[in-house]
Length: 178
Ligand SMILES: Nc1ncnc2c1ncn2[C@@H]1O[C@H](COP(=O)(O)OP(=O)(O)OP(=O)(O)O)[C@@H](O)[C@H]1O
Ligand SMILES: Nc1nc2c(c(=O)[nH]1)N=C(CO)CN2
Image 1 (cartoon, protein in one colour):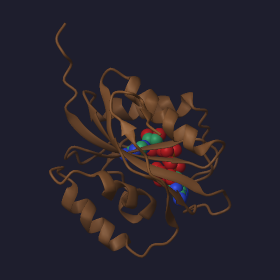
Image 2 (cartoon, protein in one colour; image 1 turned 30 degrees about the horizontal axis):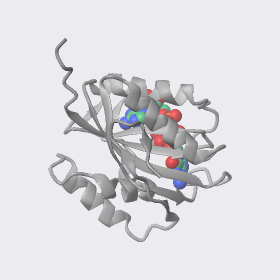
Image 3 (spheres, helix red, strand yellow; image 1 turned 60 degrees about the horizontal axis):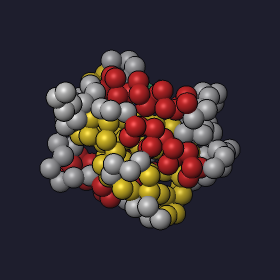
Image 4 (cartoon, rainbow, N blue to C red; image 1 turned 30 degrees about the vertical axis):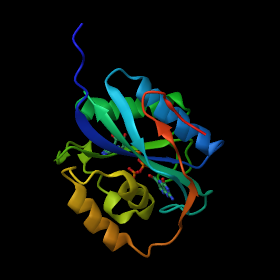
């Protein structure tokens, strides 16, 4: 059998503020990595962040991950939504509490707005809880690198994002090493 090409780069944002938050982040990455057309290549540290948008809820753990994938953007989003549901995500309050939230931030140099998928993610540029972890892992060669750097500068000084834990993702193993 020919090897499947898994060679587009995408960045995702992960967030959790219900239950065992770290476990939800870890499980989501593991489930994505189990897909034959997705490899989780690199992960940021985990940050504890104050809730933005809807403030009457517990603090989040947020992180970002770099994927290589053979899926096109729409199918990758479907996979993110599938993993969210498999981890008990229920949509109730907009911007409200969730076991796991997976956002597709950027996919190569794709710019699109189809109603069900907008790229780059339309609110990432104003969210320090997205930009701080993303800046840790984005590759300089990535098409969106200079844009992300520009956004991160404008988000500087936004409060409520604290380093919570450094991670040690082992590509191919599906988990963090201790
Ligand atoms: N880049 C994207 N990443 C994730 N979802 C997206 C994207 N663009 C559009 N969507 C759509 O947004 C819908 C709602 O997403 P979700 O419920 O996660 O929103 P939210 O987490 O409450 O708010 P936010 O989108 O601001 O993070 C998804 O079903 C999806 O179709
Ligand atoms: N700190 C923080 N706040 C949020 C988050 C999140 O992941 N972290 N996600 C939201 C909906 O996408 C709304 N508010």
